[in-house]
Amino acid sequence: MTRTGKIARLPQEIRARLNRRLQDGESGRQLIEWLNLLPEVQVVLRRDFEGREISDQNFSDWKAGGYRDWLVQQEALSHAAQLAANAAELTDAAPGLMSDHLATALTARYAAELARWNGEASDELRQRLRILRDLCHDVAELRRGDHNAVVLKTEQAMLDRDLMNPEDDFLDRFLRWAEYPKVRECVYAENTTLKEQRARLREVLGMPKEPTPGPEIQGNSR
Image (cartoon, rainbow, N blue to C red; front, side, top):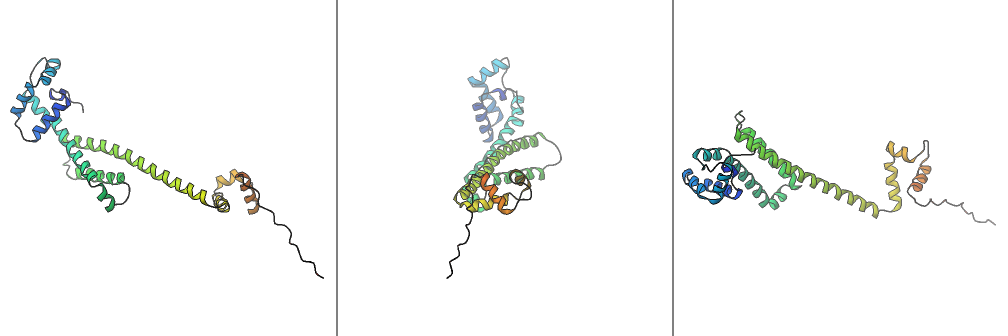
């Protein structure tokens, strides 16, 4: 949700400083006076609010809205940083793709939110779920990339194995593939013998014909 109040219009750096000071427990009155004295804030107030200063109500609205959003975001970033710091340990404890582990962690976080839900669709709940949805989108992209990389690696391994195998092994594998009806339609005519099938495959694959065994030579008897 895009916020349009006085504090929401301030530069991001000032809002971040305000949020950190709020988190440290500074009083609202002290922070309001600090904001109204800043030249950058005065520029925004003159430009967008006819010079009206930030009031107690403006500050209260920010604490209930933008500041809460910031707290939720900081909590999510803290969890992400903790996961990154423990990446090596997690990999040893749970082998597999890290993006899959992240997806599991997010699912657990969704479950935790639902477990403490009191049945009311509060603004705070919507904010937390919105951030989780954004994180889920990012993790889904990571998983897609990781899984594509696994597929490519598997295909490359299969190709390398095929290139290392002898010609006859390759032909035998192709014969097994040819058991699929669609492949048979492309390669064979109906009612062909195994010998004819092998000859047809060699022709399709550009392989030389198999040598025809010559007649046995019998020794002369005296």
